[in-house]
Image (tube, rainbow, N blue to C red; front, side, top):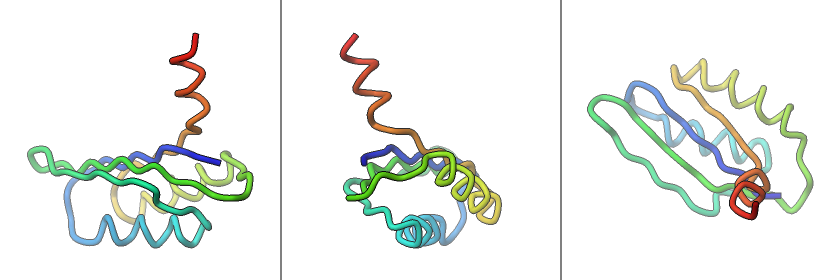
Length: 88
């Protein structure tokens, strides 16, 4: 299972550490990560994977709820969506 995680919000300390910890807690490995601050806004994109099939509704709800604690918006999408979009 591969997925894309995006994080957007006002920049503050601990966002990367918090998100990385939550992803590990959800048994997701970070394969690639990119983050930057645009003006005062933090943005992060990560490719994550798991050797097990994951329930995206469960992951999405856990990440969205965690994002509230960090004051950021966290989204997760299956890589299969992007693969299908570019293979049409």
